[in-house]
Structures are given as C-alpha cells and as structure tokens.
Image (cartoon, rainbow, N blue to C red):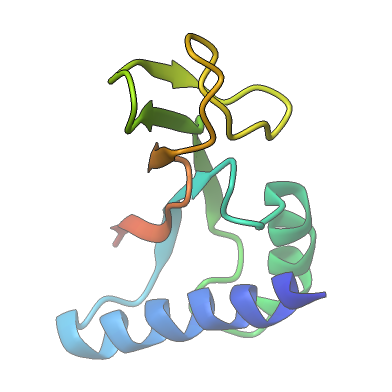
Length: 113
C-alpha cells in the first residue's frame, strides 16, 4: 500500500510546483518508474484518480515511462537486461554485479496551463 503514500507525494510535488511557478491547471504528469523500484504503475494510476480529486492535479493524465532493469558484471564487464529479477551475469554466472538502471522513480516533468 505504499503506492498511496507515493501518490500523495506526487500530488504534493505538483502543488509545490504550482505555487512556485504560478500555474492553475496540470494537464499531464510524466513519471519515470524503474522495474526494480518496487512501484506498481497501475496502483499509482488507481490511487491517483482518487487522491487527486479536489486538487490542482485532478483530471491530469499520468504518463508513465518504464525503465528496464540492467546490470553490469563486475567480474567480466558484461552488460545485460535483468530477466525474472535475476541479478546474475548471464555471461559468466557471477553474482558480483551492479544495477545500472531500473531503480529509478521520479517526477520527470509536468504539462501545465
């Protein structure tokens, strides 16, 4: 259920930005969500539809860009997409890997009037 708190945080960001930049309507909120972020985009959308009622974000479209998870092996240098949440090098089998993408979660931009 942490998606509700995350969604409320997104709305707070939008409200702070509206005060800072003096806009009255939000048409779209662009989010970046990594596969390994632990955030479920559909739940964010569902909670957003409810939590945004009566706020400046009400009626805004959520545009969610998914970032696939990738790793780099610290042993052989191989880079690969993570499949089935397996953080193991597909080339040499090492578990000594670094996640290079997929943990992201942030508000990328707002489309406003």
